[in-house]
Image 1 (cartoon, rainbow over the protein chains, first blue to last red):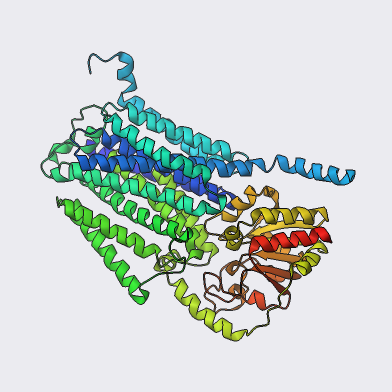
Image 2: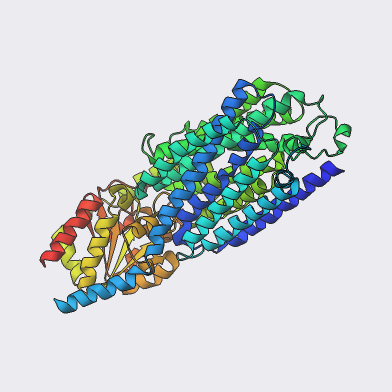
Length: 114
Length: 501
């Protein structure tokens, strides 16, 4: 019974998460699709947790340990690289709205002066 | 356990760790909500990153945690590779970077599933301990496990095997996509021709058969490895035949795959953070895949089947026969004059702009035109480039104001009152055949209706058809003039000529 309830609880979480994903992601405009993709890409790096959980198991042999170190390294690349690269991209988008009106005014002023 | 300080017992308690996971996935969702607008997006991404940090900390609090040396080693290796790669990658190389990060995620999933199998698979049928308990939080569940025939509940084996298959497909598929985008592997479709479908089908059947066998209790390590290898071959076989122009769909799809496999890992490990995060990514990847496929008027199965390259080549040959040379070539000086006397110019960027890294040159040209009171905007097709939103990122890098970027539906009605459309390295997304020629393989695909504008200047390296191999009727339109050359140098030349006017 308890096993069944673990399964059903997790299935409920799975289904609800799917719906939340659809709702949240549908609002993202085309312009931000690349950062969205690399951001969600970073989030699935959460498989890192799987590696961290398994590496604590007693009685792992050498191959399992080696596989897990690679898995943890892969997961870390995915997470750290993904978030960093998304941040770099988004900084470029964020910079736009503010400097742009200022820059336009500057060029207008500059033209006026010359 | 009994001599541990109370605080430690609390921190390592199942409920506390679970609450941290809930906080983590709430932050993921909140972070993704932030991605809906350019001003909130940076913060959104950082919120998600904080969520990830919390999830990692929660996992490390787990009382079963050990082998700290291995953890440090793995994380250090990953950081040493990931951080410099993310810092130094050029914006034009973003699609391959995303493909690579996606691939390693899939690889991690597959490796984790393999270790799960190495650890638990061999004890199927003799072990009565539930996986979730052993991984979990020191609480001994009086589970119904003893009435299970196998030690590990069947559903856990199913999710674990599913994660192994999909993770492996995603890892190899992403690596091939990376190779194609990085031009290590030719971008043109590579396939076994008509045998391709059969090869894919056979591989799929082999993978599924092995998977079912393993879930049913086959204890063979060799079978598991064989399944991983077949899944790897399948990943290669599916992505190799897909042409470069279909990459936005492929990358989105592989992203969804890795997400779903992460969610399956979460089901197998009874970890809510993994389930939620993986599933959200699966959902977002699926949405993007679908959007991209709609933007190309193609079904996802037909893209995966990889028939496009072949069809295109045939249609291209026919097209070439229909229009024997009425192409008008122009010079940078003439193009500059045309642009300078326009009231309204729309720039249509495509993959050619990315390849030539011409985005900064394009921005300079825009500035020069704006000085002359020419109204400039950018019309961006959803599948321009090699990943969703690729052009937007490049233009953002070059400081193009966000409000000058027009999505296809907003841009199309405005072409009729546009004096000059400047097409820079875009091809199929401007091809009027998609509207007018039912025989064309891209018939029905939504396009940027560049041909509606008063005149068109196309910057292109040569008359070679694009990735799809389809002749573009736009180039033979009397309104169109072609400026042959590398996008960056051609645009720079126009800018220089403009400055002289």
